[in-house]
Image 1: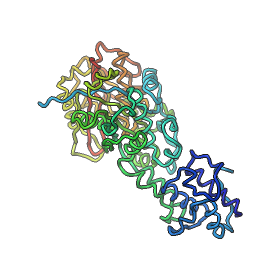
Image 2: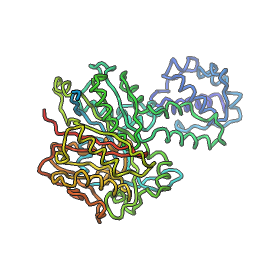
Image 3: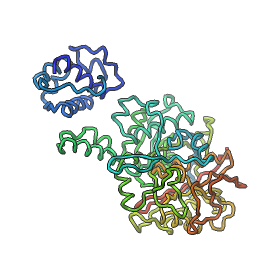
Image 4: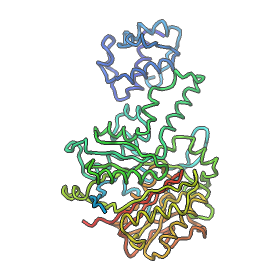
Length: 91
Length: 412
């Protein structure tokens, strides 16, 4: 998966978790929770979806790495390098 | 006897297989139209059910609906509609003086089944078990979701009463008003049961799941060929207020709750008992200080099971057998068994009798079972009794819980 595809993958997960939000203006380097309404339960949903869709386990200690889209790309790139993008709704 | 404040119904919010407001439900009940349809659910396959189609996004955001439960969504719809119908704007109210009392037959089965299905896809690895499981399955979930949605900070919880639960919500709301603990009570019942395969499978195992080539004829209480229950979803919450408060704000009053009774058979896990039901009906009459002759309509609980209907009819005969002015009907013949919502929806469907003067019929009785012959049983066509001032609404459930509520035509 390329970095752009990782962004797509995360946005697709967020779209299913926060379906009322407009994700078109999300920027890479600002905390997701400052751009859209996401609470701790939503964050756990993101981690769960990464596990379900891509088999990626994110230990709790690593959660801060997923605070921004850029953080997600940096943290997930090695873990998703061999995975295919599996978008459900945005495709 | 302690004199307690009188309590009235000033609003109704409902969703049912026959529509999402009282006018739609009543119209279908008078027209003799069934709301039962074909339905498929995993592991069970093709079966029958009553399905609700209210606009889930009228009062909830997509995210709230996703995070919550179907029972919560039904409760939120009903609560908002009940307040709107009553003309109550919570923005102008002390929200800590509003209570929510929701009867449920069961809660949590839907989410538990969903989670087991989910982890089964991952070899039962429990790291795939959702963190949403507990808040979705706690027994107060539907009432709690209503408080979150409407920012109600008063006492709010659910009452587990098997299929008597719809009446329990109403009764408890009345009690909280009479105790002065709330000023507005939202009381009734909800059911999401059609989304759990277990309830269908269990009724099937018990030999109590309805079957018929024509779904609209499957729920047929009192018919000789009845063969079981049609499971339905639904909800109905009432806005309840003390009569004095309702009058002070010039509210439209739909009915007054005059009395009620709840008792227990203490006899069997599933089989109802004539003695317990009779005692419950008589208890409600005594609580309301009424004789059997002063009840003009008995809304039966009958679920279309061979034994249950027969037992209930005997209880009705024992109390109302000599009462020439008492009519008897059944709503499950139209919508199936809405479980925790049943009692509340069935009472709602009969409330318009106070304005249109009609008793809606029991449909689908092609061959009346002699064991279910009851005086003035209204079959297949509506009827207009000479007087229609009071309705007694019965709702019974497993483990032998019985409930009866008496409401009267508003007098003010």
